[in-house]
Length: 279
Image 1 (cartoon, rainbow, N blue to C red):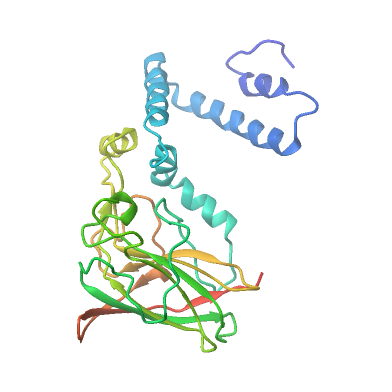
Image 2: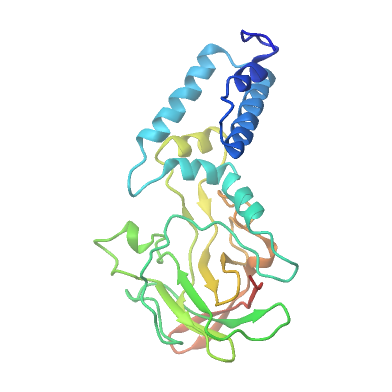
């Protein structure tokens, strides 16, 4: 092994500097990172000015991060990495409900509500009845399953984005199934909305000719004792962004027909069954 780095031995020379007592998993991860990063550099051959722009982009990405905003997660999302990591870590048998990205707007401590209650506290938006069952892979109902749900409001904002406008826990709630595994609650028909695009990631999307929008969706976190929980969305059929989700979260099995109904104040109905795999 050469002592000094050159264009041809760069990755090998860097990785050879790792100490003998380096954690094996860290050695594997960093070794692969260095190898792929150096291969990328050799492939695109950036100018020094271009590499400076890349460093400046990463610097600005870090600088805009705060307790309420994580631009690096946003970067991971729009590059499809978040969904790839999710897919690798949540491989499920055929028939089990597919997962998708967790997203930044889940809140711990949402109130547990009575089955059939409305999660819509501000009275805005078109009311929708959500219903279905929680089942195992054999089609049997799962009792005492929890369904943690959250969505944006009619303007495309989550309550945590508008703490002075929306009531706490607006469009959020937790429900638990009975022996029949059935759930039903009222929320609003969600709307599409843009991810934060006023920072480096948004500027990158614009340069790439990509929009920042997510198609309309309702979030679900569903689990039960003895079963593997699933974090997923259901998406509104026909949404204009369904095939170009900015964070690549859509899967065919999660696209649901929101059917128009006339039942008092309820204007829509969405049915979806969750199928859980045992731990």
